[in-house]
Image (tube, rainbow, N blue to C red):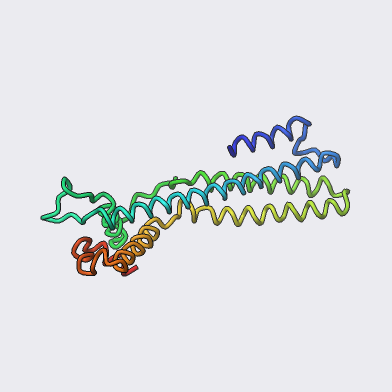
Length: 214
């Protein structure tokens, strides 16, 4: 979708023969329109990553519900064939890795980094188009001042979005989200007397203790 939006912006600039070295005041507004389209693509990216974050949060909430009310922590007497334990095992392994500082092999690419990369490309193009518009439309008077101020707002806002987007994608705190939902369901189970504290500690062991320490 973002590539299609960019294609539309490039088509608008290309159809009328706009060149980056051209200084015609008549075509100056087209540079502003191009910057606007690229800024809109950044807004769309931000809304998409927020939706992604919400969806992941809901998945972890469902996983926490399954963990608390359906699963058991494996032990000598609790076997996989008789009990669910997928989410419990994953959580315990994740907590173990975090506690021991297990380092994964560093990779140039992180999960969902494409959102950040697309935002950066768009930010660069907005900056270029805004700079060209600033010099090309200098004779447009008050309109030039308003549009130039808007371009500055585009750049500042896009820079902010570039810094915010990783928080909802590549830098997302998935462990913290899991802990928050597990704690909520543990507390709900205690409040409704579905479990006693002793039953929870016996059923989940370290999983419950890890959650309460966070």
